[in-house]
Image 1: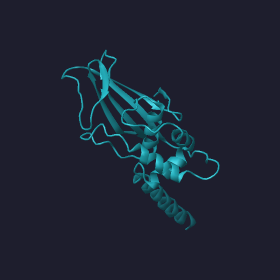
Image 2: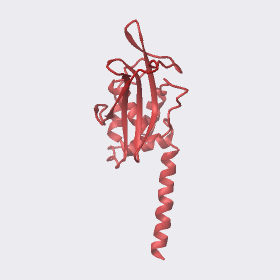
Image 3: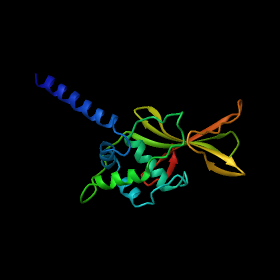
Image 4: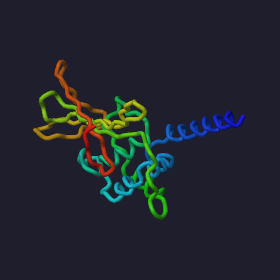
Length: 189
């Protein structure tokens, strides 16, 4: 009888925990709580960096770390028909600031989620035309942010919302992914 009660309690607790993170959306209270639970030092560091804007460099620590925090706690896949949408960074920063734990930061809880930055280019070319932020959890990868770039007069330019620049049919593409670390650094996946 005791084992049965324990199993029911464990299942109910697991369901509640899973439901809480499954419904966390970037910028809401559940998402912020998840961030402070799973990556408190990263969240504190990000709040001390300049808030990203749509012009921020894709490989800047403030953008990478912000994307890491998003990917750790929001499993919502990017809409491939609505690319190049940047998060409301100021709103994200305000939510994290308001929900910051009082006193010393807690120790990070063990997380099985990783955030990766994947770069896609035409084989043999150095120009990256697509950056994907990927959430890796439970053996599954989910693209949570997609940003396309174009080359305009030899300069890499982030494309406006909903536009994408794709290689010509038959061109080979290369995709490399690196883990976004706790400091906003990139390491080999």
